[in-house]
Length: 88
Image (cartoon, rainbow, N blue to C red; front, side):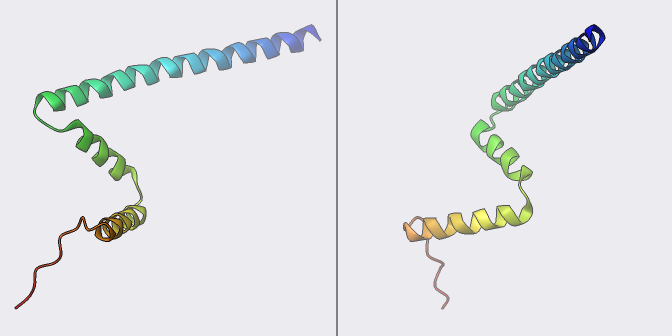
């Protein structure tokens, strides 16, 4: 029974160490992303818009189209969308 306890402990330790390494890598990547946003801001780009574009590009095309349609519908209902120009 001692061997199985030792194996379980070794497996547990290995899982924990792998998770810790991944957490360290995740932190490093997060820091790198922050630096990129800071660089973009230093070059005059709007960070909120950049973040929004990144979020939008992750979405499925159909999902994005549906959200854009709903946004336009809601904005129209609130009088926030300009009326199309009259055709003469």
